[in-house]
Length: 212
Picture 1: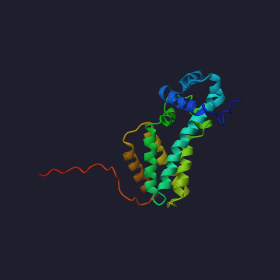
Picture 2 (picture 1 turned 45 degrees about the vertical axis):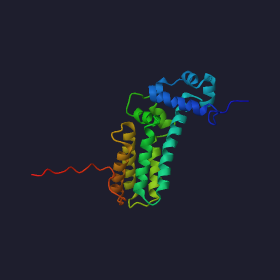
Picture 3 (picture 1 turned 60 degrees about the horizontal axis):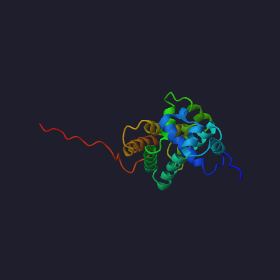
Picture 4 (picture 1 turned 90 degrees about the vertical axis):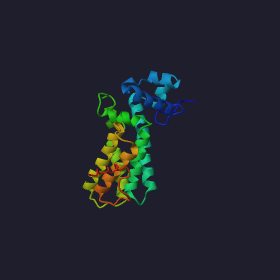
């Protein structure tokens, strides 16, 4: 029986992609080789080529798989909050940041745009498309369903700010996911001119004033 095509993949395709994700996160894209993946998965190097094709095709598969995983979280969050745009944004941002702590490829992809690992960067823009553009496209479509009181140009600015803020925290987290999501949702509510259900969940405690 013949091997499956690289596009369709066979039984070893997903394990190979998973191994490539781990290796990229641990050692960088330059460290990924077909021979190394074959050893990790326990198959021949030819099987790796049969399953994923070239190294460029492997990068495309890795990025597409991880991007689909993260964007599905965004869609699920909006589906759970069909009547509350701010809560939908909060849940989407928190879900993405929660998963980013466990799944490292997105951090590697985002970091590649700010580091010396330049070999991966061209593959992001030519192989799998722009991560930024994909994320902004999905979020724009979702937000439009709530009919926010903004024109297209204004909405584009807000979406760009939200996506860039989230990717920045994916790359270099500064606070727990819940606190970041809270702040991003609050910012989005102000920019979108919609009223949130509640104010900041994680607002800093009010300091007691000294009595004279």
